[in-house]
Image (cartoon, rainbow, N blue to C red):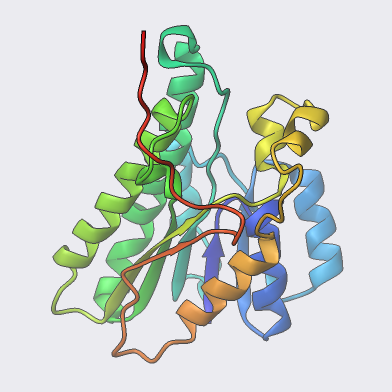
Length: 247
């Protein structure tokens, strides 16, 4: 299979890339950091095609996907993994620039890649799209404002894609992880490693390998089976209770 993974240079994306390469698949690894892509190519070999690309750039996404080498064009699985959270401030204190960056990456970038890849899947009547959502798309928490809203978009867009694709053999899944310790939190806290680590103090979070193994399981299901949504959390995490403010 040919698997297209965005955000492939760290966290979930890197774990997925290594997993699928180890199983003999071809992986198009998409990321913005050329030096990391070069290292991945050196480490993982000929079954990896590095693609230095900012998925927020609509025209570049369309161009680079249309210009893939012939033996890499027929993408079997698109994994829209690239995403980010920025800041934990309440909405009234948040940066509009942070909001825009999250929308452009988590929503627009996912849309650009899907729009570029999906027609080929439909034409071949074969393929699978896996979108990385989050439990934040279903369960609100203080400071999750726009990040949670972008992941709610991913949830509903995935369901609507599946509805549009009824009658084809193209499958769509939204996977919604809970707390997972990767570079994700370092980005959210703008490189403050202490703050990022404190988020997981005293509990055992999910790992990038957990997510990679779950996605490999989804991809390996028989063609007649569509996994609509998977929500997974660490055992040490559960759903918030009602919040009540009393004066």
